Length: 344
Image 1 (cartoon, helix red, strand yellow):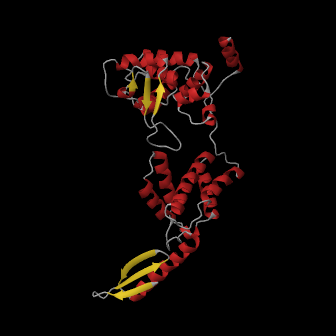
Image 2 (image 1 turned 60 degrees about the vertical axis):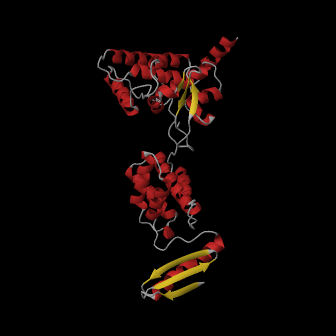
Image 3 (image 1 turned 120 degrees about the vertical axis):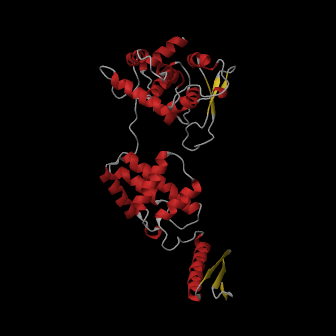
């Protein structure tokens, strides 16, 4: 029930107590106080009946995204960029009118922009996170399935929502040519051959390699802690201790002999990626369609060829499921015969 009282200043104070909700506000005119109280009482009835509050009158999707970013503080350039884009494209849409047609038109616009199915699916996934937060963290009566349904519709529009699985691995000849190119450059600042050999010996991502710390290496156990390892659910604190196999330890040991702290390798991940791509293009003939990350494909396949089982390979590579690990695995029939013969 709402109560109204006039303050000595002449302003009107409204108080609402309804369904366990208490709100109070002050207004210059009584009719403003009454209008506000009626709206709050309506929200209280709505929440009591369905468990969710109606969206504030005039509230937009842009308002919700801003509040989401303030509360969640999302990390990562891709997510930040996408949320900014969603604010620009859909920010003016009122939450009360947000519907499937709105998102259909958004998808049409993104297709016309030249965005592929994978990119649009990611856009809608980020939007879904915002809507779910609004419904379950802010208890707003909004349909948090809208973005998910729009994402599911992409398949019916013949838009591929999964990246094509990549199986490219560097050949022995390609690696030999790259090593020779770097060896012929005395002013090469980044020890690219060392980094490549280490990537092949560990299966680590270039970010993980460049972030390794000397004090995270256990010299007796021959292990290293990979900090904040990539994980679809845990963005921070996902530390993992992994073994350094003989080839990897042979590379690391001379680099840390007299050191207690600091990075193991003096290189930035972005610089490594650029140097690798540039070297592929410099060669005559150039190496086509090869990236530093493809070393991880070769390393993973090599672990299986050694006879390591899925749990042990997953520990080395950091994959959480066989479905994820399988994408990096290129085991051929000859490899199976070789493994059986070596165990005979």
